[in-house]
Image 1: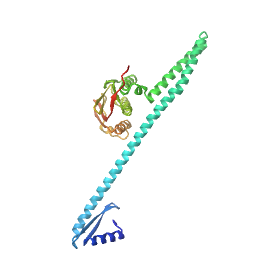
Image 2 (image 1 turned 90 degrees about the horizontal axis):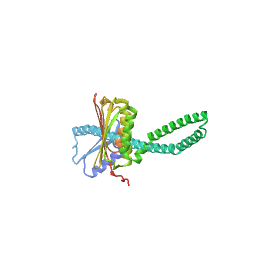
Image 3 (image 1 turned 45 degrees about the vertical axis):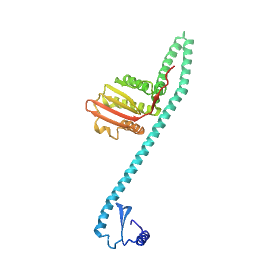
Image 4 (image 1 turned 180 degrees about the horizontal axis):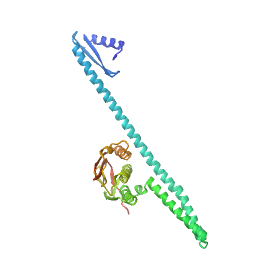
Length: 302
């Protein structure tokens, strides 16, 4: 029931005191759930004919469906917003953790390895006339140097220092060079002047987006070339990444297993931006991203 007997009695009494002689209450339902009620009253007795009540009952069904749908959509919207906020928090936490780990590796392990190398170099120089020791120390130094390089690679993968020191565009140039070195894919860059300073959070997100897009290109596109263009117009940053590969299929763009695309899209949404992906079979894929951004001028070197 839309109203209990006690509520209905009270409602009827109030209406009668106000001069109404015809009363009707039609519940607004969705399936077995009562969402509300439509109250009708008229000063004339018998004014609410059965056909009118039946019409209101039909209307109440549609109103119930509309209310439920709106409520469900609102709950879905809230859930999506909560998931995006959680995703953003996790990304930021992961980025902070990566930075902290990179710093710890550099400060702690880096010092130990450097000290070990100095000790081995001393042994090599001290016993240079002892062939066995000299040769062994040289081979151990080579292993230490390889370990140092591996550590540097891990630190760079965790958090490229160039991103913090020289900024977004220098980091993109470095990443493009790494792409060619690791995969042979050439990269054409069109970037703003170096004196443009982009907000740190935006810089990190854009850099990670480009990394993820490069990873997808290497894995799936069969491309030989990719172009990256960044433009900043007023308070908007525009990123275009275009490859000459086989072209992404429409079904892959929205596929729930396309984790790379999902990750990129979530980063864009977290920045309150927009993203468009298009692919042409045999002609490549283009990704266009637009995000709001606050820019300034970097300090000029003295």
